[in-house]
Every structure is written in C-alpha cells, then in structure tokens.
Image (cartoon, rainbow, N blue to C red; front, side, top):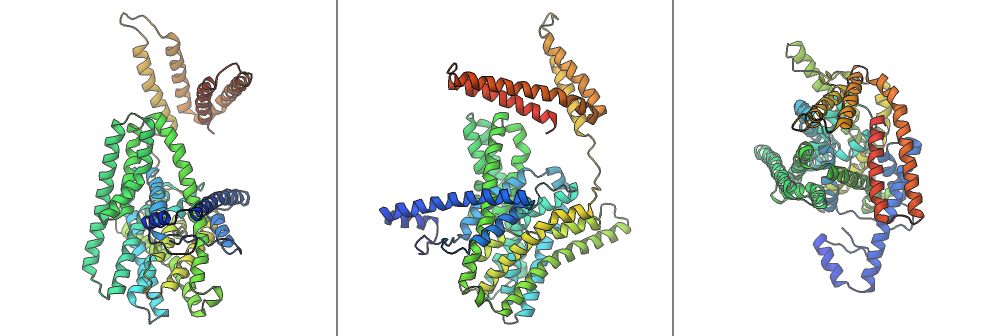
Length: 555
C-alpha cells in the first residue's frame, strides 16, 4: 500500500506507526483527503449504479468501466490498493453474504457438481492456461506459467452475484453457480501459493501439494464450524440486540482471520460459517434482530460490492504505469493477453461440455444418478465465468523478482474486464435467448400449501387457548379472526392466483388507511401536540403494519 506522498507502507500496523510519527498539520490534511476520496467514491458508486439502471446494464459492468475510465482522468490521485487489505476487507463479507442465502439442501444435493466446477474446472483452467503461456513464451518457467493460470482460473463470487441479480435461473443451475463461486476462490488461492513457491524455489512435489491441499481445505471447514459454534453460543446468551447484531456482522471476518491465522483456508472457513449462520439464524435470532441486521447487512454488502469494481477499474492505472504506460506494452505481450483471455473462456466450455458428455454416457450405461444439464443450462453455466476481486488482488502480492510479474498483472486485468464487461453484459440476453428449462422436480409443498399449514397450526393454538379452565370463551374475536383466516387459506391453497386477485383491493384500502393515519400522526406532531418519542413509536407500528400489508399483497 502507498501513502498519499507516494512512500511505501508495509502494512496496516506500519501505517499507524507512520501516522503517529508524522503528527501535525500534514497528517490532518492527509486524513481529510482520504476521507474526501472515500466520499467521492461513494458518490461515484451512486451515479454509476443509477446509470446502469437507466441503461439496463449489470451494475458491475458500469462500475468497472466507469472506474477504469476515470482512473486515467488527468489530475485525479492514483489509488494503490493493498492486496492483503483487499482480500481481508472485501472477500469475507461478500462470501458470507453468498453462503448465508445459499439453499443448503440444494447445496448438499449438488455438491459433486459444485466440486467439479470449484476444484476440477479451476485446476483444469490453471493447467491449460499454463500450457498455452509456456507455448507462447518458452523462456518463462513452468511454475510461473501455472501461477498465471491460478490467478485467472477461479470465477469470482462477487462478480457472479453482481451480474446474476435479477436473473431467473433453473434451481440446479443456480445452485451450481452459487456453490462454485463460494468454493473456487480457495482452490485458486491454494494453487497460486504452490505455483509461486515452486517458481522461487525450483522444487515442486505433487504428492505433498495434494496432501497440503486436503489439509488446508478440511482445516478451513473445521475452523469455520468452530467459529460458527462460538457465534451460536454467544447469540443464545446475549440479551442486547445490538450486541447480537454486532457479533453476527463480525462473524465473517472472525472466521476468515481465524482460518488464515492457523494456515488453513480462510475462504472455506468463511463459507462454512456462513452456511451455519444461514441454517441456524431462524431459530437463534429474534425477529427484531433479524430484520434490523438484515437491513444493515444489505447496505454494507452493497457498498463493498460496488467499491470492489470501482477500485478494480482504478487499479488498472497503476498496473499500466508500472510497465511504462500503454505505449510500452509490446506486441508479444498483447498476443499473450489475447491468448489468455480466449483460453480462460474456452477452458470452461471444454470442461463443462466434457463433463456433460461423461454424464450422458454414464446415463446410457444405466447410472440413474448421472443427470446431464442439457445444452441450454450447460451453455449458460459455461458463459457465467466472471472474474473479480481475487483475480485482482492475488497478482499484486507477487514478489518483485517473480518472472513475468508485469505480464501477469496486465493479463489479470484483461481477464477481469473481458469476463465482467463482455460475458457479464451479455449473460442476461443469453439466458433470455436460449431459455434454460428447470428440469428439477418441484418441492412437495408449494407456498400456498405451506401458508395453509402455518394457518392450521396457529388456529389449533388459538382454539386451545381461547377458552378458560371451565370452558368459557374468553377470546371470541381472536378465535373468529383466525377461523376466517383459516377459511381463506383453504380457498387460497386451492386457487392461489384467484384469491390474491380478490384480496389485493382489500389490501389497497388498508394501505390507504395506513397512509391517512401516518399523515394525521405527522400533522399532530408538526402542530406540537405530541412528543417526538410518541411520533417515533407510533410511526414504527405503522411501518411494521405497512410492511406486513405490502408483503401479503405480493409486492
């Protein structure tokens, strides 16, 4: 990382020491400039996100292109992104967000396919890219070629989630993409470390590498499970909602840093903790904590996700300046860049359609569990290979004396831009064009049936408690209300769409009544008839009531 005066700072603790010794007006100016830059980036995020919505682009594309264009505007300060800070700041919360919303049942059911992509496809792409680069540059050591392959091989969880928002996919395809994006960063990072060590030492042992890979992966899962168990223990015993929210938000960094501290996969530790959080939060977190934490978490993830793509674009300037500018890029390097971009895309197609052929052959041989995706889903899966934060941050950690370091940096940026801008922008159109079919059998109970089951359970409790010990009915209105709701749910279960069409006008009237109550509440507050505390409490009740009506209306 570099300070504002261009001096190199070795890490966060060195930055604190340097700032302490640089007390006085200069420190104040630098701190204000840093804060102003953060605010400017947030304003830029808002503008580019709005532009993406207007142009119907994936927000990730607009943020990446906008950041890359603005990075070369004369007069703007150069932004140097510390790679270790980028990984620890951005990766854990964005991985946690993906794991939290992952359907655990589908994840377990499709785990073989997920591992085929997260491990098999990443290793295959690493090998293919390494062979192609070695063929073009025979003087580059094999291990360095494979290091470049490891940098560009893992599709990114952040990019996949950013591009696939709002896109409807078949359930199996969605499970494969979500699961792959959660686990493949770990594979790429482990392969990268092995390749760099082999390049610098000149020694590589396949057996030791495989054993270390297994230890790092299994150890990461164990650390993630242990950290999640600690979160469960604390969340059950803490009574303060703010403390519960805080430890829940900090869980991602706790898992990642714990994994890295014991030299196992922080990525897998974070994913494991996120899956546990998504599974247990329904029975551990109170409703108010879940609602408030969800809102805070969504804002945090939105900001971090947007800043990732802005900073990727800005970092392009530093990478190009390190090699002497765009004009200093030789034609030989351009040919390598083009070859790497094409190879990365082609390798994914080859792996996925090759796996499809094997599954099809196994199916013909009578193996019932072998279920090919079909060419439509396989095409979408092959094209959805966007790269992002890991491919950005990892090459910046390369040692200065690493052979081909500058070429690796430019190749990494080229792959990110090509996959996010070209593939990410066209993925939605591709899905609409080929219309992949959801071949997975539906769940045994649809939403109307589930809602009817909940209504029956609630009515059973009301019927039991509506009478006192001697059989006198003490809650007649409550009992009648739930019986009416049960009769409606029985009709709704039979024909959900017709009942909702009949019910929406009812909700419209209730929402207008809530709006009238809100207007009257504000009027009497503005007239000085009630205190602010009364306003806030009654407004909260109206907000909860309006949210419930809006959700029931189906919006």
